[in-house]
Image (cartoon, rainbow over all chains, first blue to last red; front, side):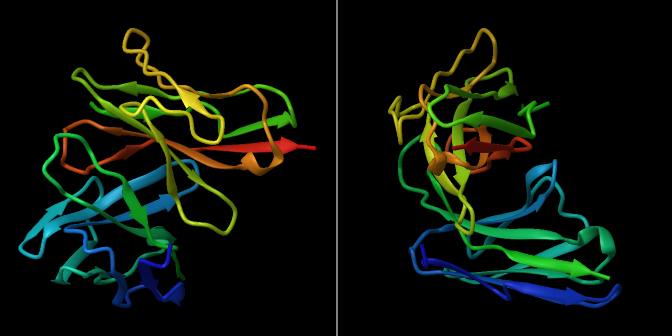
Length: 116
Length: 110
């Protein structure tokens, strides 16, 4: 599903560097999420945003920051990268709607980040 | 604490054999449970959700509140079922926040 895109797809950076991962979506969804995936740990929520003015910390936000530049764009920054931030990062979106149930999340292809 | 546990990192079966991917959750309220799947070189995508009570690609999952489980089952595995499977919990309705398990890799051998 090319509706959720992430750039870059792969990145190698050095300890202490600042790096930004970008996510764009054309699904028209209000909600966007950033996860990291680590072997044996599954996906863990870093930050999420319900609209442009609403940013919330997730389970593991320390060392990360985000920016919701527009409804369609949600960026994740590592201000000073460290090796244990080496992981696969996923962006996801979902609708909000009027219902009471949780809506399906649509995932991007992932960004593989290596911090040396 | 809200938690999802998938006890098996890897499940290997032969084609045609029954499959059961285990998922247990910890949550005192009324959860919404999901199974997401990631096929090789593809994105993570929703497989099924307990609210829908539907069967997707032959898979079913029943929410058992007494045992706090949401195991994924298929009577006859196919090679194309080989993938990583994640169980996920939404503990608060309509917040969109999901808590994922560790994932189980299903390997279906010919």
